Amino acid sequence: MTKAELAKAVAEDCGLNQADTLAAIESVMKIIKDTLSKKENVYLRGFGTFDLKHRAEKTARNISKNTTIIVPAHDLPHFKPCKEFTNALLEK
Image 1: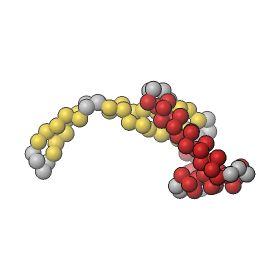
Image 2: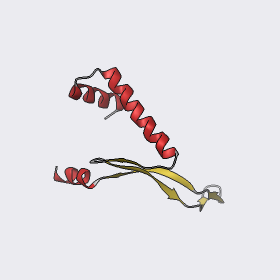
Image 3: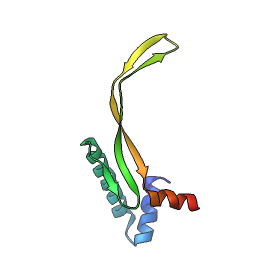
Image 4: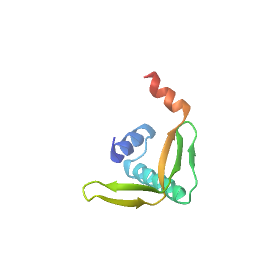
């Protein structure tokens, strides 16, 4: 499902127009990104948690050039679904 399809489905479900729904979805995504960039988690009860996973510095190899590089430590966004969400998917 694309963002446009999601906006259309939400608009039909809530009886709103699609342009306003798309703007709301864009706003939610922006707020989640901004919150994660501040290294804070976003918890949506009944859905899941958006958080950051820290990856330590590591050594990697480029086999084709036979070189070694250092990959610096970094944080990656991560989503963990809540138990109710996971159970709902397993029941179907």
